[in-house]
Image 1: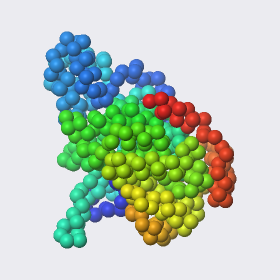
Image 2: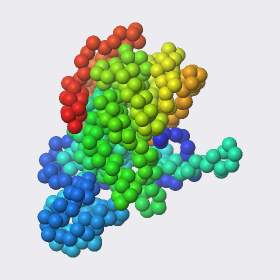
Image 3: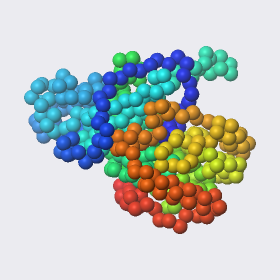
Image 4: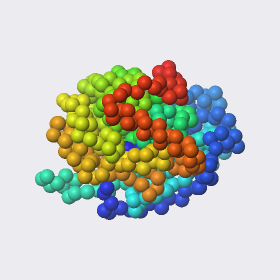
Length: 441
């Protein structure tokens, strides 16, 4: 996980957060039928039109939809009993027809002296997803050359249970793909984080779609979630405070460009050379890096919004001077900014994070090429903050032979890539299915 707006190493002035999470049993099953909600729609994901239609069918006055909206988004209700503005019979009827909260249980781990909260969410069908809430105290005192940086609370959320893209440095990719999240399951991650922040009087200031999953392969639901989160009558977060990340789904980027959104587009790049990116981001075998950057370039031109490029730094793999020069050439002249993030350790991956010295040298070389660069510090490493790590822990460790074979495959592929050989392998089967399904939405 590498949120564009968020990671940093500020710790001064931290206010520890002490949530009271429920504990999710180890090895929670994605297919546990005892937790199935019977396909009931999530209340928080419904549009005004859908609510109006339901209340009309129930013979209820139109103002009931507003009462529901306020209860969900102003009072952050989690059960039907908390819909206090509604009569008891109507509350019971709503409880029969909808899920007031699509997240069944939370397990929250605290790291960085209270600055990072990693949440594992259990959904009603047993699927596990993750979100990360990161706190950034205010810095600076204003004045010439010393700008004041306001306090920020950035939430990284998931758009899918698992991920089909299969980046070998990512714990989520090792879990494989489960399913797309519903709109309510996306926005309820925000409601849960807001509920934890509420007692302290703080609010979420930024949201990044950089958790589990590829957002542009579930684009319809992601766009619905953004509409809800930016609605002044609901969560009321400005679109410019929302970041949507993609590993390079070019048709999705083109679709976003046509819509002209004001949220920030982030590209999980990780390599500027096709042979290496074929390995690090398997989706590159479908849409090569030049095609991805061309789509992002058009997006920046049409929207006027700078594109962020995420680049996980892996020692001896993608952190060489050759890679830095290739990155600078690829983005030269673009409205773009690069975020360098040291790799989080993942059990199935044989690689290690680049050293701080190597990251600094890489950044300097890219800057010399005329590209803006920020070095991000990883957050919550003692809480398993890499995307997918908590879910992987709950699922249990993979057998040692499986891990060994996975490492051998990664080493073989990366050695070929470093020789400049393009991958001749097809997309993984579940990624091929996800790409085809995403293209139909």
